[in-house]
Image (cartoon, rainbow, N blue to C red; front, side):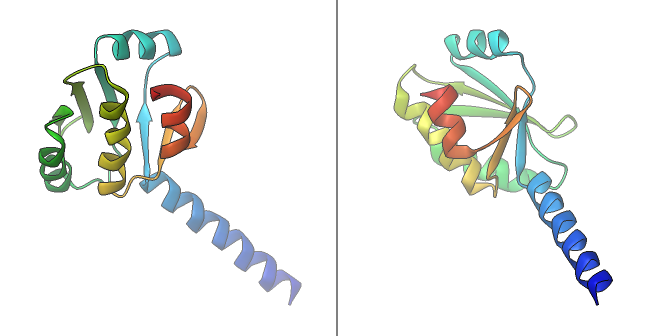
Length: 123
């Protein structure tokens, strides 16, 4: 019985991590590169392989008052270009991610919930 419970626990952990990976974007930049890109009103994020290209491009159309998105289907990189350097534009990034079923951001060796990433790095 203990073996079965241990096995079920391990399976649940694997399912959780698999779901987390499917719901995580990656910001592949050093902290200084990231800050430099933001100072130029730009942010590049890599979507997971499970991301839906049509959904990414269609949801990007909702946020054109704040940023534009160039999505490369081959590399899965979305380049966000903010129209201004206002806090609200960066906050809307969180809505864009949630709209695409993204709940986590991997950056600088850590994984953050979207809102925590905004509070620590985009605000």
